[in-house]
Length: 68
Image (cartoon, rainbow, N blue to C red):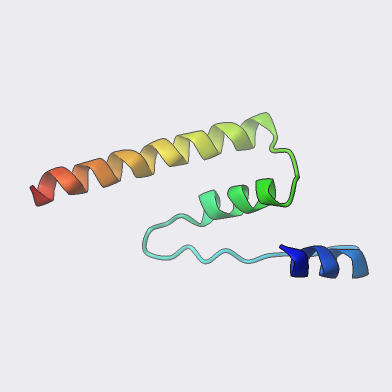
């Protein structure tokens, strides 16, 4: 986080890239990172994050059921 803050103090815009890997968690990672930077999420972003977290919890639960 320190490195990101340093860069942001030296430039007007900082952009990040979140790879949508096999787990498809790029949206969750980006929104959580935004929170870590101290930026408040909009209501829509909060709803998206909650929906995504619930989805991944359900997928994980189903995978555990399949394995047992």
